[in-house]
Length: 334
Image (cartoon, rainbow, N blue to C red; front, side, top):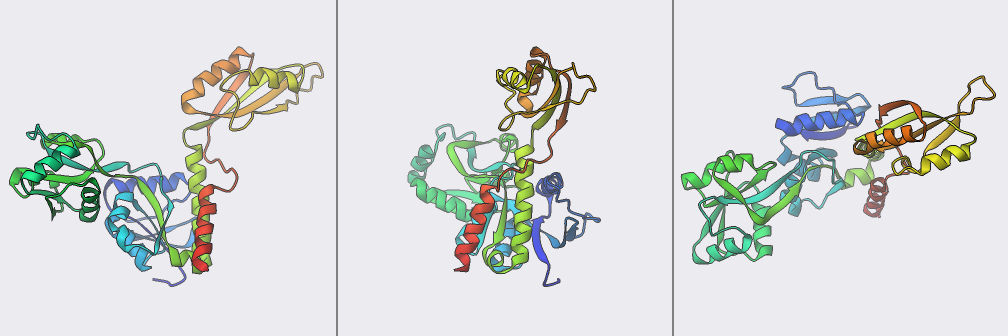
């Protein structure tokens, strides 16, 4: 491993790996992984970045130890390891994919146990066992909820089978749709969500504070991530309109509820070669769910030649997360 390299850890398996690689590619941060079995790769946007693939649960510990500088993993793994991770900073807490939740799930035959209060009542009359690989998170959750008399037993793999084979009475596991739980005759408890999770971008606090190359790569990645997330699901509309003046066009456009753009629409004259033809071009950005309504409104004010294109990035003023990152680094350096 070259010491000058900025090291980024990404998930090495399953849906999380594929979604992370797709997300980074959409952000303009493509990872070049030529062999699906290899555990290192490159990022052409940053020649001095080395990408390493690790199990999602190992990434927070690698960040804290300084083995890698940056990483993307699920927040559930960060929450589980957080008590030992004073050296880690969450750079972006909502990358918008990998959504899931760590939930308490009980057998469907427990008809009298619907909520956390019901579970607490049952635990007062008998010692219950919960199978999970998120022992710290579950322990904290049960303590904060005042649920006593539950013994946590560690388990990996298919936790859903634990109650049926007698290894545990109920489980705490990750779910996104609940289908696997239902297929195994389990159901989530009401108010039994331990952690809500999605992909997060994390970094080593000391590396960000003391190594300018790490901070530079992080800032650039964060800018592209924010620009992509801001643009996702938005479309740029171009249209032509005939009018007496820019004020006339602006008045007609701004009367419509969906033609305001991100801030205001852009209006500019068209060069027609005909002094009598007062044509203007308008362009604005709209979210996908208002796209058809916006087109209808343009037609209603005599707009024509409507062209629509997806927006790839929206770079606005310096993102708030970049400002918070710099503030965190400055405090660390003092």
